[in-house]
Length: 125
Image (cartoon, rainbow, N blue to C red):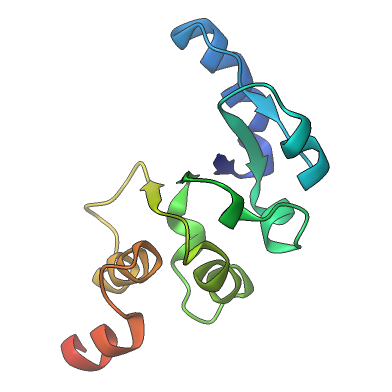
């Protein structure tokens, strides 16, 4: 499952066919997920955050534009940590990892299960 911003959905669908020669399907609900015949599915952040899609169903997930996790107090960050906790393989994709603030990197580590965000912030800041 690839989760991306709404504005990136059509681009992903087109590029997966053009460059990878694979079909990626956009899904809106768990019913659509369960009926989907393709191996790679795509949805947007709001669908997951609002409960339409349950990420724990998937073995692997990838967040495109992972900067949505940058704010510790945001609704997305606070919702995503528990929703994705039991996904065995979690990935984050960002175009600009190096210039990002160190705190943002800690939020990625928290989401990925590498380090508890609260403990890391207390320890390093």
